Structure formats: structure tokens, C-alpha cells
Length: 378
Image (cartoon, rainbow, N blue to C red):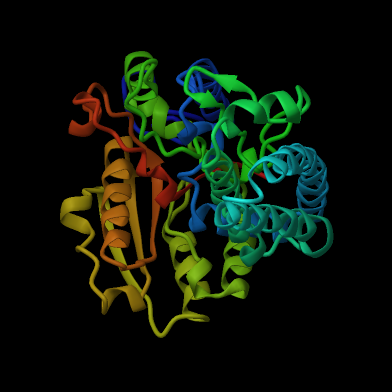
């Protein structure tokens, strides 16, 4: 077995930074080429980013004061952009009030209310934002606030047409093939301000348009590359510190994980930390064996969710990681929130084997359900 990466003949080995960086680079290029080209709002607004993603960003802020300071600074700069947009909305609103004050009082009231919500959101970013989980979850509300304001504006004859002209070229109200274009994600200015702390693709790959992200990814990447693109390189102390931060924020912040490059002693250490916050921990060792999710990880139940499951195995692969992600996403759909930590000694390339959802181009990118970590030397 290779000690620095999978061997050329397909044997198991460690994952190194170069493999992860290469896979991330390939996925970045595909996403950059495709995302947003259809002018739908799923990718541009990040409407499929959710509470779990915000927990992940909050944990990153706890780990790094520099990261937290940058996020707060960038969001406050973003608030200036949102205020420019608000000024454009208010200019248009004054015109509509002058024209429709006598016969559209109810519609004007809804417009005023939507603009007040917009103003309050900008004030929140300027004055109250501390990058906590609650603050970050509240940020997800902005796409709805903007949509409500635009809906209130388009209730008036000509409202949607006059807004881009009155708001001006320095705002987000630009006309596209489908009317006023959606704005960028709240966490995006010149680039994504939280890219290193959230899933690789915030829109979770629910993409079936043309150009289609799913088709491009399955055409240009193997499932091995796709899964490796979601890994992060961390040392053992960094992983244990991350777990400490999660536990200090509350058990609900503990993310399921696949950690490659550990051993039985590391799995024992993880289980010991989890016991400090949970009523108990279930441990399982697959001696010298390969992780088979269908066999080795029982379907979550309300009882099992109270006890994290820590699994130590010799090898894991991309298909198993993907299958585990699917299981966890389905569990969340049933309002179950299990914590599963898999510690694998080595990574095994799939060697041509792919998950059925990958072959059928039916992936829905559930990898955000897992934190994927490759242990590297300090």
C-alpha cells in the first residue's frame, strides 16, 4: 500500500493534498463555466444553502478569528450594496405612490412593508451581526426579502419595467432573459466570502437545466474525483479541535464525518470526546475490512440518533461515502439527525465502479451531509 496516495494499480493508500487540490480545481472550473448561465436563481441566490451550511460557517468562525473578521467585514460591505438596491426600490416606490395613491393603497402598504424588512436586514448586518449560527441562518432570509419586494413592485402596472431604469446600473436590478435577474448569494461579493467553510457547491446540484451542472460533472469527472473534491486536509490535532468546537456549540452542531488516514486509536479518541456530550456512543470495528454502508451502518432510528456511531474500518471508497451521504439525507427527511463518524485507515479507488445515481445522472449532491477529512502530517 502506498503511504502518500492510492497506488497506480488501484490499491488502497493515503489521500494527499495534491489529489484533493487537483479534484477541487477540476470541479471549480466546471462550476465556474456552468453555474448561473441559465439565469435561474438556484445557483445565483444560493436558495438551496441551508441551516447545516450556516452551522458549518459558524464553526469556521469559531476556529479562526481572522475568518470571522473577514466574514463580518464582507457582509457589512455587502450591506452597502443592498442599501444601494434599496434606494433604487424607494425611488421607484415614490413614483408608484404618486401615480397610484388613490386606488392601490393596499398594494402600496405591502410594498412599504417589504422595503421596511429590507431596511431592517441591512441594519442587522451593519449593527448586530456576530457570525453566530442564528445570525447566519437569518442571512438566508434575504433571498425571500428581496423576492417579496420584487413581487410587491410587480403588482403595479409597469413596476417591473421601470425599476431597472430608475434604480440604475449600479444596482442588482438588471434585465435578463427572464425579467429582472436574481441577485448574487448574500455571501458573494467579488467572490464567495465563505467558500472554504461550506459545501463545494451551495446549490447542492439540483440542476437539470441547459447547460446542466450534473451532466458536465458526470461527463468530465469520475466519482472518485468528485468525492475527493469535497475533502479537506487536516492534521489530527485540527480534527480534534474541530470536534471540541462542535461540542462546545451543542450536540446539534456535531457533523457526521468520514476521516481517512486514522486508525483504531484515533477512532477511540473521537469516541471518547463524543461521550462528553452524549448519553452514550456506539463503537464498531470492521477488522481489516472495507466499509459497506448497507451492511455495516444500520438505518438510523430515533433511538440510535441519541447515540453517535463511531466506525473504524481498514478502507473506504467514494461509492461508500456517497451511499452514506444518501442515507443521512434521507434520515433528515424523516427528521432524524444521526451522528456517524467513520475513521478509515486508507482510501480505496473505485476502479471503474460507480454509484447507480452517478451512472444515471440522477445525483442530487448529498455530500453536504458529511464532513470529509483527509489526515495529513503536521
